[in-house]
Amino acid sequence: MKTLKKLLALTMSLCMLFALGACSEEGGEESDTLILGTSADYPPYEFHVLDENGNDQIVGFDVSLAYQIAEDMGKELVIKDMAFEFVEQELQNGTVDIVLACIAPTPERLEMEDFSDIYREDPAPIMVIREEDADKYTSIESMAGATVGVQSATTKKDLIVENMPESELLELAGVPDLINNLLAGKCEGVFLDGGVALGYIENTDGLVAAEGIEIGEGDRMAVAVQKGDPKGLLESINQTIAECKENGKLDEWYAEAQEMSAEASE
Amino acid sequence: MTPLLLANMFDFSFLPRYASYFIRGVEYTLILSAAAVLLAIIPALLLALMRLSKVRALRWVSGAYVAVFRSTPMLVQLSIVYFGVFYAIQLPSYRLFGFIDVQMFVPGVVALALNSAAYVAEIFRAGILAVDQGQTEAARSLGLTQAQTMKLVVLPQAIKNILPTLANELVTMIKESSICGTIMGIQELMWGAKTVATTTHLMMSPYLLAAAIYFCINFPATKAIEAFERRMRRGDVR
Image 1 (tube, chains in turn cyan, green):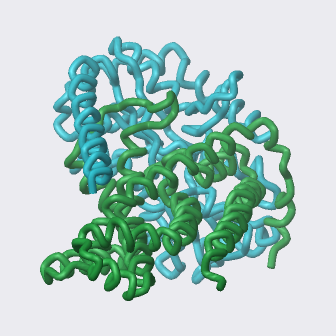
Image 2 (spheres, rainbow over the protein chains, first blue to last red):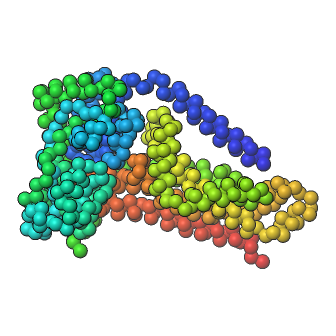
């Protein structure tokens, strides 16, 4: 029993050390970092690549803008990557300060969080289908009853529910899984943001956009902050967005992100 | 049905460029699962002893714990621990060894360990019960106290039954830990495969590589455990 006691004492003291370390860490850091919540499986908006030294890095259009926002605030950007369906929850919890994840200020979301000015209007959402079905699915009616894949908690899901009530929904957290389902013939189409859909169509054999299926408009993307903006971030964010719109940086970043995504898929 | 998925199935052109996701993934997976099983051992031993105790309340508590954790999905447990418990307990942002993010790693290890403790407790209990009752009777009649009997006679013999099964639990944990990548984005092996699939738009081959790596870790490990088990049995033959 002596050894057991020693072991117990050791574990407990380790725990305390940990807790103590936790206290000293927190104090200084809080104000000089800006925590970005995003879901980095969405090229070209946010995705993982390796830098020259082989280190994992999150890049993309949204990320470039987030870095600029942090820089203009004089803060250091910290990126927290998670599944899309948890992004808003973490923002409401306050564990992240801002969210740039291709999100649009919908009425439902506006009730839960505040948004900046629009920084980008995406091309309209696209129904991605298999090439062999290109002649078959030419209108919303022609896809009646077909299974359509959508990402959980997105505006695209709501659009399909409203406009294609007869279709079966396949709802998953990640876009790659949706694309796999489409390729494997488990669903007939995947409904994605225009920008992301084009990336998959260009880089994956056998996928095309369904001509003649137009549902909804392109997402108007904005930066989300906590409801009521308790951290007072919105003014600076809006200023950064206005500046970057004017000096063409937004377009530059988007082109850059597209290039990086294409290059990463080579 | 469609040959589309098969077209790029064996396209491993993402190597060697993205190999580091898989290397880091293996490191992460091994550290995560080893930490979880090690952390589970002491609570599991306590649970097993409680389960075998004469006090009904202790038996009940231990039984309830094991029942709850064995009868609910790991995915649910992980979600509750990560979004519930570790929302209440805020951890500092700190990186262990430069790459292990404490804010994700600790909840991951705790959730896996809580789950593992239930299974390991059963492993311990079975191991202890498998020791012949005559051993306890002999020790007690020689004047050893109950605690001494457990510590000096029963547990040393039980270890022989326990170790191989415990190693099997580690193998299970290596596979189970992949859900940490899905829920909280811990950069373990499966997360690495998913990330490479997203970035390269290659839909199948990264997963195949991940499967191959899991196999290459777990298959030799199971073989080694079998050999070890045989070695432990050597004393049983008369």
